[in-house]
Length: 208
Image (cartoon, rainbow, N blue to C red):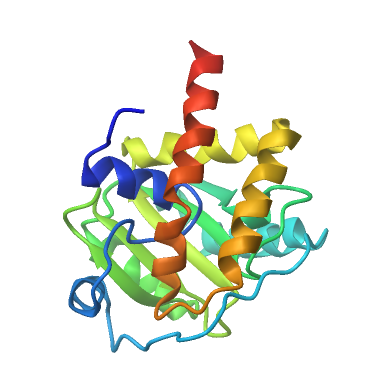
């Protein structure tokens, strides 16, 4: 397997709905964090797939479209909660595509007015922004139109939806890793990179 560079590894990690890719130290994670970084220092809570997750996504998507209007170019359900049958952290990952995610005045005040809180700002990685809902049940990932990560996130989701063998393999990896104690949730996310790479390789071979 050819070794990927750091940006590619981060891209594969965000495909799952977890932000920050290969960032590991407290200092690195704090650099992209808006507000104080708090350690997790615990295992990861995973739950069985909930058939209500698509409805929760649809409700939030409608609200975001109403708040942003034409600025919301695309709103998608991504991450593990978007894959029927897959265990997941009980947090809905959403992808929001705007014309220019670096231009925060065009969308951040409106989202904050709707209750979303800006928590991550990554200017050097596709100008990614991450918002949390007040009750911590939503992760909203924001990218600019045309960002390569958009297609990767959707391809990974669609592949797992259509490929039960890889869905179950990914679930087994997640279940094993979740039992361990992690200083930050991002460290758990980083540990899944090898499995994600393996699955994405198969998906890419299928497309070629």
